[in-house]
Image (cartoon, rainbow, N blue to C red):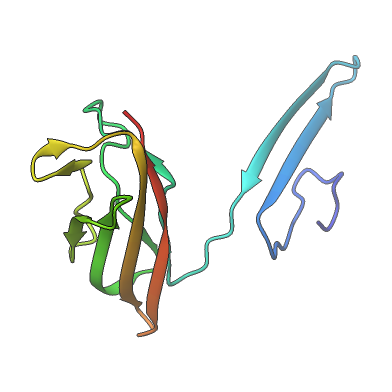
Length: 134
């Protein structure tokens, strides 16, 4: 950070970082807050680690979000703990609703895999886990 005492500091980040802000007025009253800055690299994807398909309109679908543009999604797949494919799509806007063959799936950890190309034509293959919370 160029000047932590500045009203408008500039930080050049190379990794995800927590910032803590402490302020004090002329009477000695203090306040404090913090914020986490996650670096997102263009041409990559953000994939949440959990979702809650309960119909409340918040986090009801599990799907990746492209950062910096996506030229093509070859597939996005979700597997249960037995290795059974429970969801697959080629449409980045279509997310998994937590059902398999119309049946609500249990609270559990699921494995996802995606393959796509970014705007630069670079093929991305990503894998991870998601927790379905009921």
